[in-house]
Every structure is written in structure tokens, then in C-alpha cells.
Length: 460
Image (cartoon, rainbow, N blue to C red; front, side, top):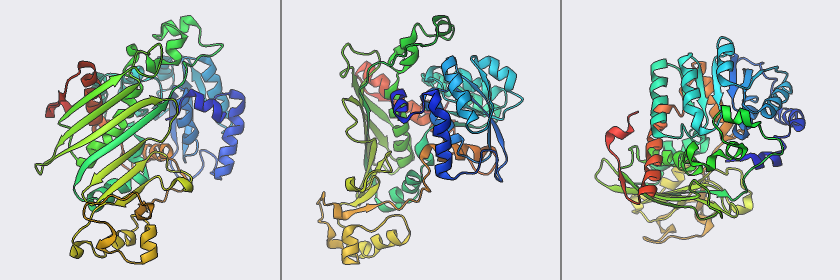
């Protein structure tokens, strides 16, 4: 996940660089000009042109058949950036400083809205768009409270319109392969999942010329520091701990196909002095009661560290193998593959012989160094209870991405669903379970006690 400081490094935030950057991307990718192609054109409005808004806009312009009609942001500086950015794609957009004003003026001119504003205004803006019969793509997480997340689900259902939540992993070819074939067919019974997210420490963001105080007060901010760093202030929600946990808790629920039974969590304010209001560290243990009578567990660790020593990752532990997934799918080869399966245990010869080579033939994994050297796979590769760190037993996942990052694939899925050519990968009602799980962990850490879930908790 990228912050505003990352965008300064990328050269996106400075409005003077936006046209050059956008044209270079389009030229490098050799994409057809926006609006051309066989796909039906979709008219879109964008609410929020901060760091996430810039990410989404950048990749949205690389999708076929997109026409951005309007952009809204409460900061005039961001609005000017947006106008410059879209002009580089030969699209003149109407700009607004007030969301309600944009909605009233543009509702007949657009078919869908991208909402990339701070979490605490998601519910109000998403529901307003849905009630005006507009499809919505909403950045993650859904909202700053569980009640508002549930309201978004109910309004989406009542409107009959699409509400895609920004759970990018659900559109990732890597994670789709993992949940379709690797976890159910290669790992054996899944017993434990470990996930971790790290956020580098950084000072509070400030600009020389932030929005004027009367503008900030009108839209609910006490000062510029709160506006620019809203994720660290409790009045605007749980912040980064919730954002990271919700998206990875969604993977736990997908892996076992059931919601969690309970969660026990501890959190702290350990990284910053003076401490910030929201948690900068959160460790959670989820318990899952499975239909076959077994109990399984998942752990999640969110930490704010001096440096991001390793990317966000998940490890799915089965009785036959371990699956390692990472949000960094373009790692240097010297660091090894980002996504792989490692065989960890012995199986009877009758069950094991030729089975691993069949996985390779199916195109799910690539052969390990050991496989390539010995040609065939035998049960003697691993001992009965051994776990070897020998990289020669690592089988990389065989994923073809066509150079598209997950965010672009997720936007493409949203656009295809609008055209009736696909179903949403992350509809609000399906990812709501992960919001219940994440808020349960936040509540557990605050109360210092285990939180138990009821089946009814997972119904919006």
C-alpha cells in the first residue's frame, strides 16, 4: 500500500509532472488511446484525488472504453492536478470541490463512480451514489464502523447496482490460482494460516499550503494535520490496522469457506513518541470451527517498523505442503520467487508418486530445482516430519499476468461487470465477513478479551 510520500517519489503528485508521466506510461504500454476499442464506453466520476485516487486514475486510464467526466476533491490543489492529469489523456473533466454538487450536476452524465476518499466518508458517498442508480467502486476498507459497512451492503442490495470493494487480491491471478487449485488440491487439509503486514514509520504529512481552514471545518476536519493524516486520528476510524487486517482476514475466510468463530488480539502504540491515537501495532489470532469437526487457526500481525523489511505475505500451512503468497509479485530473482509452494511432508508412495508432476502438467506450478535435476518425483524427497529450508524444493506458482498489476485487473473486473460480461470479484456482501472479523479484532484489543462471533453477526 502506498502513501503520499511514495507518490512524491513516483513523480505523480506534482501537477507539473502529471502529463509527462501519464504519456510515458501510455507509450510504454502501447495501449490504444482512451475511448477507443471494441468495449462499450463507460462514463465515470471520481470522488477523491489523493494518493489512492491517483493510483486508481492512473490504471483506469489504461483500461479500454473509459471516459472520465468529472472529478471531485475538497482541496483545490488536488482538483488542479486531476484536470492536468486527464488532459494528458485528451479528456476534459468537470471539477468540483463539493461531492453533493458534483452528484447533482453530473448524475445524468455518468454511469459509475470511483470513491477513493478517507474511510470515514465512504458510507455517505457510496450510499448517495447507489441511491442515484450509479455503480460504485469503493477503495478499501468499506467504512470506519461496522454499522456503516452493513448499511452500504443493504443500500447496494436495495438499489440493484454494483458495489465493488477494493480487495485487490480477489482479482489477482496469483490468488485466484491459489484458491481455485493450490489450496484445495495441493496442500491437503489446511491447518494454519499466518499473515503479516508492515508499514514504514514516517512523520506526519504537512504541506506549505494546505486547504484553507474554513474549507477544512466545512468538511469535518479540525485542522490541516488531521486532514492530511486522518488515518492516525480515532475520530476518523481505526486507521491502518483495520485496513491491512480486513484485506488479509478476507483470505482466511476464503481459505476455509467459513467465518471465524472467535478472535483474540492485542495492540499497542509502540512506534511513535509521542504516541498517535490509533494503533500502530496489532496482533490477532482467529479460530475457525470447520464443518468436518476440526479446528483451525490464523494469525495476523500488523506492525509499524523503521523500515519495511519484507513485503506483506500470507503462508497457508497444509498437511502436505505450504503455500507462500506475497503482495510483491515482481521481486528480483536473487530473492527467490514471491509466490511458491514448498513440499513439507512424506506421503504413501501409492498416493504420492507422479502426483506432484501432475500439478506441473496442469500448469499450476513450475518444477523445483530438485524436480528438474531428477526428472521424476519420489516420496523420498522429504522425511516424514522434516521441514527443510532448502530452496531446491520450492515450486514457483505458474501465473501469467500480462504485466498488469492487481489494481488494474480489479478495475477491469468492475468495468466488465458493468457491461454485463463478468460478475464482481469483491462485491460488498461477500467481503463484509472480513469487516466483521477485523472489527472484532479491534474490539478484542481494546477490551483485552476474546471476542466470539455469532452466525447472525455476518449478515449485514
